[in-house]
Image (cartoon, rainbow, N blue to C red; front, side, top):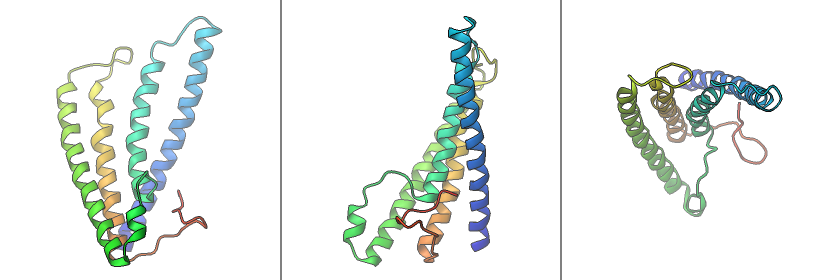
Length: 170
């Protein structure tokens, strides 16, 4: 079990590295797009689509990471007011509800991909389904991360925490 958690933490670290590279490329592409449009007077036709589609991938892959690290916005007032055993039960219920939602997201993500499979993106001439593949891929990764968090909650596996009580990003 600890090996599984360790493997997922390494996968998450790799995903975080990929997201960092994509963010950097998006920043450079955006700057060059502005430069090309206003200075060179020759806007890039394809850059806006690339930026938009990569942002979708960033959000979906990032969701898996933040679920694992417990960095999503939540209302924790009730969790701080209840006894430890009730808190643990509530955490398990919350994780299970997340997993159910993510399974629904996978199902509809594949449905959307199927509908859009024949449609091509305007400037890039790639299937639009590739963009929407981010939904099921991100949801699958998020489910796996939810399972890791569930195992940690059930078996009281201690996570490393920062001095402020938050989990480390890497």
